[in-house]
Length: 353
Image 1: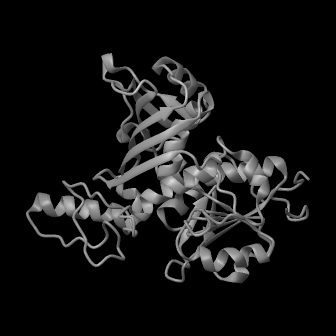
Image 2: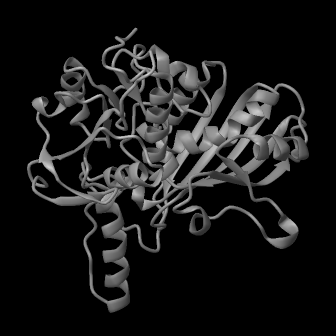
Image 3: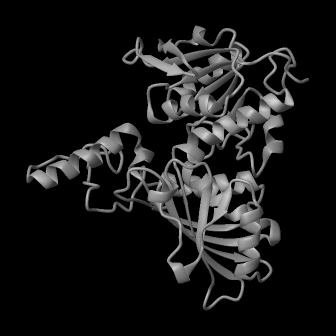
């Protein structure tokens, strides 16, 4: 059933980096809003934020905050495990940017350009994939459609924006300390929850999140498990190495793939250029390739350095870059919400599967 009114929207985590981007995108994309409620922790309650020419007061997020809400955009964090069921209980559909529900078999994990049909399978919660997974699959799905991919080896170069405002501030503070000759004690990276922290300024850290028993990090295994779920293909062999780099915003990834059928670089370029949400920036003769400084603030994922492997006839190497806060988080969530509005799946009166 298609909605005949504008949905009531709530943004949880409205004062954080992803939450603020969600609000900007609601305005930029002229998302149809019946009412808008901005929610955060008690520490941020009372803040004032503008959207579409109107100023809103941020409220403390409590279960009752979701009464009358159609779509709740959760920016991420452990609070999702507490408040998402409360929002669903009150009739909202939650689009969640945390990792809480991504691998739940009853929760669809969606990139709208790739598996929009999965949105209709929701039972009140739709999960947003990890930022690195989104950027990688936006580059790989057009290739996968030409020939199934059987092997992926990916190394990520992830901006500090992936660690939120605190990660960005830590990079700035460390650079300032280095330039002034003063000392700075890192406290955020590779993860604030860990007992040891390393500087990110003038450094790269080959750890994002905690290590698991298999010596891969949670971030790396997210890319493995989420890719299998989104593509509905568990046969793909995937190895990921996730690295934090001293870039403020926009991730980059070096990706090697092996396809079932041999493909040419020109075939891949054409498929990528025709795929919604990707752009090809690939001209070695003019030193054209995607970089975070160019992709930051942009919606699309850019792909370049597309070249045949020198040893494997079915092997292709490529390089992708995309804005972690936009397509890697907030934009993907907004696109899911837009798809729901178009199809009527956010209508509180229509029921759910």
